[in-house]
Length: 308
Image (cartoon, rainbow, N blue to C red):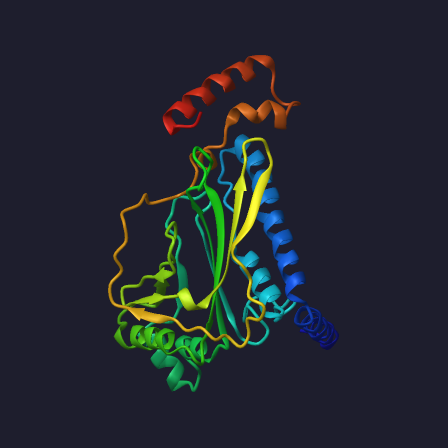
């Protein structure tokens, strides 16, 4: 990297740190509400428009969104335009998972490296992946999922939750990482934490052992998209007045007993975009004969998916 480019990036990081750390709680709340509106309402509807034509998924990639949220809440910026590296400039990590317009069960993935890779790094005097995780200041987790609305016959609500772990002080979280790395063998390298998708709890499950994230929950934000094009939004758990230093800690849970639920809380209309709307979105490419066929197919899809 050229010296001038590095200096420009460093100056940008310094200025962003100043701006972000100076935000009031009110400003953080306003920024988050605007961000959620941009991505989970406006962009989602835009993607659905193009999904109706192409048949591709309208799922939103929450990876970078989670980093935006983490920077707004913690006051710590990213690394400018440096590409791969730490998610936040202080070395903190950000993990995201989403189950909106998707059918797969999302996970928070942690690349801990294989046992062989760990040994090679030690021989070369390098840090292992797990050591890097254990040296991070914070682990910020974001989950976007769907839950049943509290109102009868209303569409599922989009729920956005975040948790933040103080890596240096959280004994349970560190114990999970240390035990996973002690027990791993062969090609095992990915510590997968299963977030509480669709559940009204903060239990994070794993084959090693489970963690209760209740005391490190940062916020719980809900968005209800209405059929008339409007939306309601509210804070189910409000953003704290002050996040850092993080006072809460995760707790080890031996067993998790939950009521049986559907595998996904994604709305059917997200999976198969209604092709009957094509003439409205793309009037220049469709004639009347095609429109009649679209209506017929749309009706059949609605019957099969239970969409009225």
